[in-house]
Length: 630
Image 1: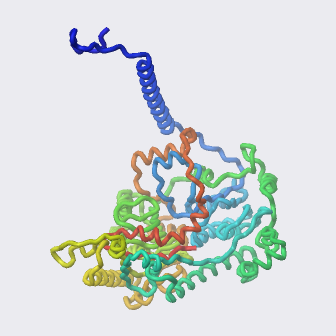
Image 2: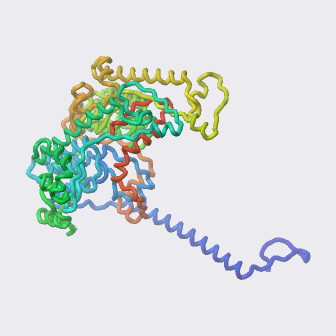
Image 3: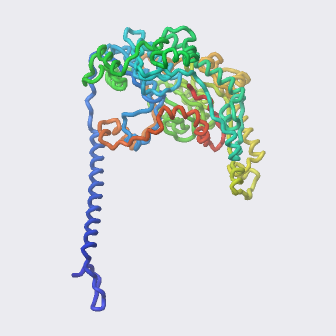
């Protein structure tokens, strides 16, 4: 038998018939290949079916009971804008876990629950909240204060209250703590990591150019300790914010002035008196109203609000479910819309995902405003310590151009709007801040590290020729020449002059007065209002209402202007939010580093992270590192 078409004769070696071992492995290879192709096709078909199901299925909306307790259970960090999540990660991690909670959703749910007759009470479940800053807590607290004006009670439950959690819990009519729990009040601080000795040991030449006595951003790279000027103004705003915290909590809990500071300063002796029982200390100090185990809390809530529709737990409806129901029931009659643009994170050039502010991305959002004739006014919510000076000016000028077209533009400052964040705000008609916003920090700096001495230590040298003295002068492996240093410093001086001049014009102040308020110094929103650096004090909700008033709208909707998603991002988001996501393989991220530990490490790692973001080729920044808002 012939196995191929190769001609042969008596002098040609005839092909031999494959042996049984070779035939077995051939069969095995074909079987494996068939199985691989079949499985791949099946997986592809299953994914295709999931996608079709996600796009075509319409889940029946949950019918809420006639009476229920609204459950507020924020998770992770409080934010103005949720950070970008890659589509693949969104699919693999599912949509049930979130380490960020938008403040606006919580405020909207509280205010809607206040007016909804079905809501009989508000239950705060705060165990999963990791923090978010006093300014954000203030906005939620103000909404809780409005809710308390009704006869509906607020109940706070928790196993252990952190400082941020307890701030919100203090607005409750009743606070319950676990027998093994405690209230972790410590006060505010601003400790930073300084790298000068390490930089010297690594023989890195860190060239710093700045204008402003208080520009703290560069201190970790040129000092081993906090400068007296930095210590002065950081102490001032920290004490102001802590004063807000303690006064609010003491007022809500009807405690005497100074009670919170006494509780902290005497905690060791107070604990000794109760034999180390933190929960009992909290009760004796009137910080809580009762000590209950998890089972006892659940039983108490069931007795007061009944069983849930599913028969498990108390009759409570989560705020996200409640908001979805509220949105379906709301009347859509409005005079127009207020566009809301969220600007969160470091200011950079180009296009940037959510969690950063990209100049090109921001321009795209403004273009969406121009293309929507129903938008009559715009509010820009800024939560940023700054970044690229060039990108900040691009954004400011684009905001000013939108105003010139007749669109009212108001800025609402979140936890911080400093340096480049404040620069951006100068393009608006009005600037609003919360009393605890960190703002100002009007200053400019440049930072260029060079590694010529580091390379020399390991035997690497750089040499060559250039056509001019500046050719190759900005290489990181060469010494920065005196001419190059002079050029950068003069550029810094010019941009600082432009910054203060622009602020003076926008705020109706003299440039000399702005220079006195500038110097890179950080102010709280309350002080900035007194100094004329902002127009009004108020929350995002109040800023939006003011913008609608500017546009002469009595009834209005709010449209959040988001970055346009790619088709793949839209598909991933739709699948992750549908019931189909339950069938997809879930990849859990390693939990060896908890979210709370990451939060504690953030101040330690911030100088390194911030250094990695110094990517502007102009090497000129308006950035506030000290604005790590507590």
